[in-house]
Image 1 (cartoon, rainbow, N blue to C red):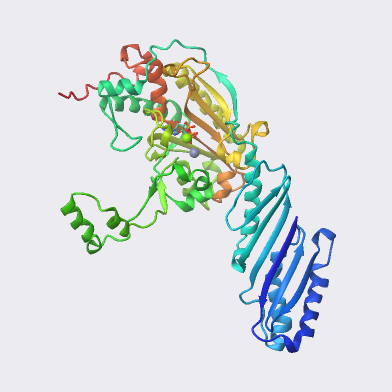
Image 2: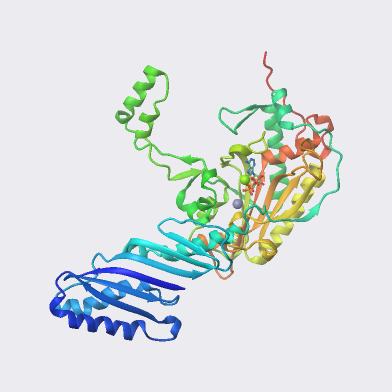
Length: 502
Ligand code: ATP
Ligand code: ZN
Ligand code: MG
């Protein structure tokens, strides 16, 4: 690594009469601060006076002694040695004219990349970033290290692009003969059980469909969560950005959120023109609306776990409360699925139960085992569906570069997938992920600074998508309750009559 920095170091007065002392000051800094210790720690400074009151500095350093870290130190030393004595302070408004950073990549870059604030040049394994006209504030904020990491991450990701998700089968149920091969969404629309919602990817569920979703909910709670001791909590649907910044969701999928904008004010006066325009035009004036809306600082729930982790932020959990087993069954999840939307399977607004667990590694491996057992009981004995489980790599592990076989099976995500007969053959069609189960190590524990009295904590969560459970079940079992498995019918004795339309 090589850091090559050219900076303007302004003085508050003329340097001409004290040039000798200043030269001494810089050579002293060069000799006693920069040029000390092992070779990889050494750096070099050169300086030249430009006019009367500006020094041009040039600092070149290796990885362990970053050039930019010296600017505040030089300023401090200057003001002790020169400033006080000769009444010429230095370094106020220091400007970085050019900063060139060269570093080695783990793998050769496959194509050009760009990052904000700097020009990036890649040649084989060699990366160079060049910054121009940077303020001291910028350097203080640790942006440089993050920019270097971003370049590394982008090059690393070039090797995974288009490779598809990591997917490793774990278990598969026996084949089960489907009752039909129709798309349940289409058929439920025809029967009037559901209706396409007022906006994209949303649905209006009528009593028959609600009864099915409620049966799924009851099964999840009574057959999985309650027997394992999970307690219900209620999380907020509105997630402020600082929470998603901590979990990484905001950098992971900014294009999938539904953003929430607060009004600037509730002062009726300020809204008057908006109201008047509406009264006349019977339409919404978006120009007028925009004046009264603030920029979003939050989004609608994407998954419940971030807010649940936030609720433990900075807390020390008593040993006797471990493992913490809680679930949210209230917050709807919204995701902008765009071109991927399909039926009630891939929607922009869905109903999900999310259990989360916090405890020691052993406790979490134990709870995973128990959850898997209960889930198997539900899908084999109650829903009686054809399904399978596979290890997959979620984006946040990908980000960390822990991909492929290097994934430790203590942590990671298991996807549960169901065969969807209407999509084609078992072999060639895409199965539907209807839920997942993760152990995420200490990622979120660290992010929210959650502690125990003595134990090292890990956490994990599982997303039970009610629309997905229902889709998987109905795609295999059809819409005729007489053909549904008897143990499922214990949770849904009969379908409500619904509403007849003329
Ligand atoms: P997919 O790969 O299908 O988009 P995902 O990996 O984005 O799913 P997760 O973030 O892991 O999904 O969410 C966990 C669970 O939430 C899924 O297993 C599923 O049950 C449910 N879910 C996610 N997205 C949707 C959606 N658009 N519509 C309905 N349910 C969903
Ligand atoms: Zn989660
Ligand atoms: Mg998704």
